[in-house]
Amino acid sequence: MNFSWPKEYTDYRERVIEFAKKELNDDALIQRDHEGIFARDLWDKCGKFGIQGLGAPTRYGGSHEEVDILRAAYAMEGLGYGCKDVGLTIALNAHIWAVQMSITLFGTEEQKQKYLPKMASGEWIGAHALSEETSGSDVFNMKMTAEKVDGGYILNGEKRLVTLAPIADVAVAFANANPKVGKWGVTAFIVDKTMQGFECQPVQHKMGLRTVPLGRIKFNNCFVPEENRLGKEGAGFSISNHSLEYDRCCILAGKLGAMARQLDEAVAYAKSRQQYGQPIGNFQAVSHRIADMKLRLETSRLMLYKMAWLKKNDKPAMLEAAMLKLHLSEAYVASSLDAIRVHGGNGYLTDFGVERGLRDAVGGIIYAGTSDIQRNIIAKFLGL
Amino acid sequence: MTNTITTYIEKEILNSPDTQLTDQDDLLGSGLVDSMGLMRIIAFIEEEFGIAVPPTDMVIEHFMNIEAISNYVLKRQTIDG
Image (cartoon, rainbow over the protein chains, first blue to last red):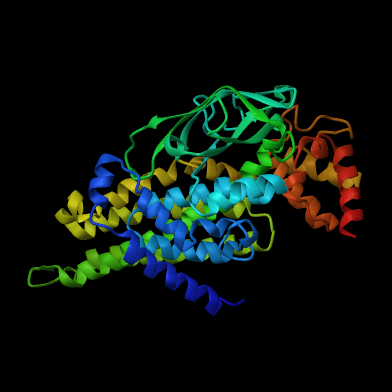
């Protein structure tokens, strides 16, 4: 057992934190959050730094020789700590792990050559098109079809709640190519904006994470050539499952960083804010709340690092991914509410930036598998 | 091998020791085994038979019934050495 990180990793994480603090925190965040604006300029800065490149090897434009999930998760924790725009970190992780990593893991050589360099540089934005109107938690019970035709497939259907959909250049989309075998016929396709019948819909407004656009993608008799099928026919379940494990690991790492920042801010406020002639941190009602925030942070951190280690070592991690997703996303909501309580009236004011944390946190207990679905997975693994 | 896999699925996945599966019973298409069940079966055969199941192999043709699973394990044992 060794809880220390290699210096190479800690040095890289420090560089990410420094970059994020210096380059990604602008004065426009509150306005962007209010209006639901995605910061493409900050996305491009991340591309130049190499953030998107974490999800591809250097031979395909990535920032390191091979994808290293431990390095990536640790770096994403740093990004979440340094960057106050949680929507941006969610956007980056959705793009890198759900889309880019699917191609890195399952793509043919031609697919990797064609798509990864543009995605790893940030030039192209990717979306993971899975959920539909009638298939949310029961996601593989989808209606979208892929009809086999000469030279490829015709896709028909509509995806919703797709992160980055309104501005996507490319999507990994899931459709059933063999409805007779139900979910086992679900197949993944790489669809890009050059293909007719691929229509990205406008932004849908939401409670939090407003700086990352969310929307629908329509596939209307969209012809996708055979060479753009990702993996085998029927591999949709595996592709989705594997990319989601990476996605959960690194999206949650970003949130872990945000929780660490939230804790630091709460401690600083509790030390500086005076009431009844003393810092409010002297009152146990406040200090115990902050102690609970610290406990949630550290338990989440241990679970995240274990999950990243399992993935790095190619070990099964479905149970650990479920436990991590459940614990960390619920912890983030609880700590965000505690952060508001610590900050009192100021915490409730939008301009103070604390209430945004709670709105951003709530999405995490819903998307990529609700907390209750995670409990189902855990119970199943216990044989219940 | 087939008996080991059958017993595991009957007892641990279906939670029904009285069920008697045949080698040809459709596990996935019939809904007897769901996606989480499949992940547990994969974890089991990896540990029990010392193989690694690559993500690209997690398709219906390898896991549709017990015969297919057994054949797949034999194939992986040959590949993995």
